Image (cartoon, one colour):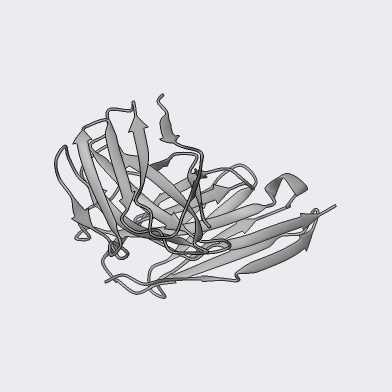
Length: 114
Length: 113
């Protein structure tokens, strides 16, 4: 078994601030993902990475940067937080290249922008 | 790209009743299907993974049906109990979608005692 850790659990920022969210997995999975989940809504893909140093844009990449520093970690940066923004950011990883492998999710980072 | 529509967005049933959640998808090449459960305040947990070759898949207290002709996937909780109250998400993947899976918008299920 393994685990996905996301830090911080709660993040409060100011409008215009640059904010970084971190994700670590010890599954030794190749692929990692960042999703945004708004209250009562589905998941929207921001960025994903199929291997170390790889980066692929998802459907919602504008306003975000990401970095796959090493196989086990994938960070997401909100480049300029928007006032009244509230969402949960979910990190996920997948064991192998290919679409038949399920994604394992972390507990999420809950963002509030004042 | 793939589009996944999930219905209903909200579902309330009594304990012991069945609850059915349905997803339709657009890509005829879709081959892998997933159902996730998200309890309040928690992250997503995989409920079942379904391959295109199997039309009926049974889990503990639920059945997943796949109709490839209609491009429809459904989750049927056969006798719901309050512990089933959660958000449920379907997800669909095609062989050429570059490691992506596409999620439905979710169904918020409430099971009343």
